Image: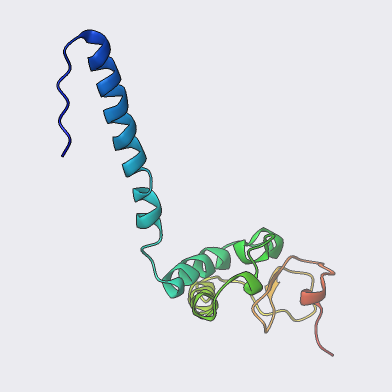
Length: 124
């Protein structure tokens, strides 16, 4: 450890400025290390579960630019699908049957009443 003895107030100011700058620089990467403590599967599960409660598919995490399946690992997507299906089963929407009501498709897409979105069309 480096020990510097400051003899006047200018030297002390320089010392403390350097000291706190070094501390700040060394502590900066810490949040990034802690942020990645979840496994890809667990992170995917959490995002999938969150998305299951979002009614409009375009508002879901997985449908945002640069967040789709192509941008994630297989482990993440396995977790996402498991989380989505697990949390989605708690929703109380009826299966889509062609009537004009909010519903859930066989692929588990949530559709608003009267939606003409491709994923909301019934297979004939």
